[in-house]
Image (cartoon, rainbow, N blue to C red; front, side, top):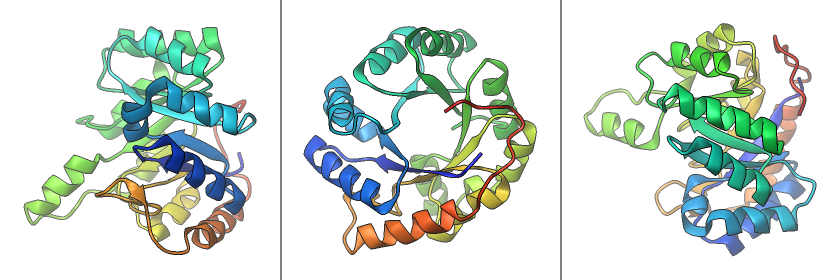
Length: 238
């Protein structure tokens, strides 16, 4: 599987999200993510506007679904999302419902292991219930809270290789990655590389970061795409 670069539009304004998405696609980004802040601010309308503006670009709706799985997945798929996100900490029936809705409405399911006591077991649980991808995720609040205690901030890189080895589906690492870590994800066997806070989005204000973002993104995309094929145990149809 060739590496895929996804930008997380963790913004609260659809106009800024559309502008950022256009810039990211010019720079070589492959997938667009309607981040949770954007979904909270704009809902289905935000996803619909992304789909209208970019009819042929894969869109991830980061719903972080915990309940009502079928309806949430159905609504976002009908709005134009290709991928929806369900949490491993949800009841297994919710995960099954999201997977079924994905089959019924043509969306694939990304399972997120954020908050799992055993992150590797959480990833395997998601795969066993039919998710198409695993998001190995150390949360924003968790990272900041632990750092505020003067302790080492956890990173998804800590167990990324273990998660990749435990599952047969593609893995994405999320949560406070440095630029170098994000670019290195394919080395760990994780082909889905997400760029967002704090790499391309201001993590505190949830607005587009300052500076020459397009040129920076172009260099990042070139570095990630240069890895070539990454072995995946299960055949995935994108």
